[in-house]
Image 1 (cartoon, helix red, strand yellow):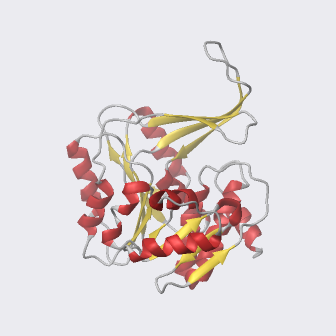
Image 2: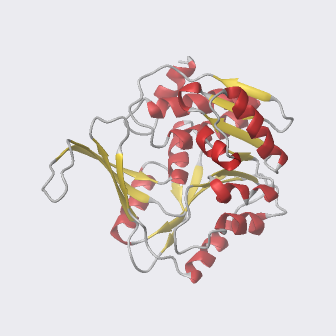
Image 3: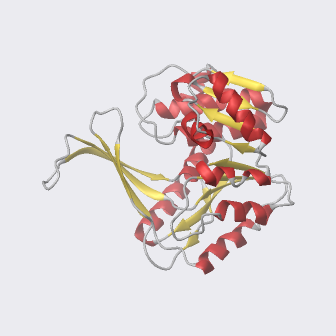
Length: 301
């Protein structure tokens, strides 16, 4: 089983808008609602690939109920910890025709210590051979080393850990030898004070991360595709697929899901191909990629 952990899930409201005028009434155009968070995004794309997963994390209030109900209706199993107060965050993403969206992200509810401990009880259901995906930022009410604590809690079991994080959050888990880490080229460059603008540079610095403890390092590079350093230090490069970028939210999460599914089916080379296709299909869609869009890019339909 694959378990995805989203510590701060959200209701994402994505809407079209014109120029934003402060201190005035602004009218929004067409809008859509998505239930998100990086781990949940991974679960959604895994479902499209026919791979079951279970979503873990924290939910609260009416928005938490909507998140849990919404993803359950999509066929994803959940085992969230329910908080007694507050509400799961709401993120607003405004599309105004500019190259980048304007995002207004909520903070999320307070998570008390007893509820954090309840999450760790959920983790005890993870067995040898399972995979856990830790993705996204840490809520302010949890300790900044929560990912380390989770991996320490699972240490000694035959579990694959996948970590999609940046900065110290990523560096501090390397001692637990995660099966996969997935920085993008900008995040990887920030770790080492370097500009990573070619696949060759991505491979060079990914190898540094591997030597620091990661078993495999996958680097997403947008329109340049992706680079993988595998457990034997073999380098794989996959060019980006062609298409019109409509949305970049969730593309990295989609790549993680594709990599996990591809590795289970046919090893590292296929994992990179499928991961790159999943990331591209999401980037070319208004929301997360569908299976038809993914396999169309792969040319397997």
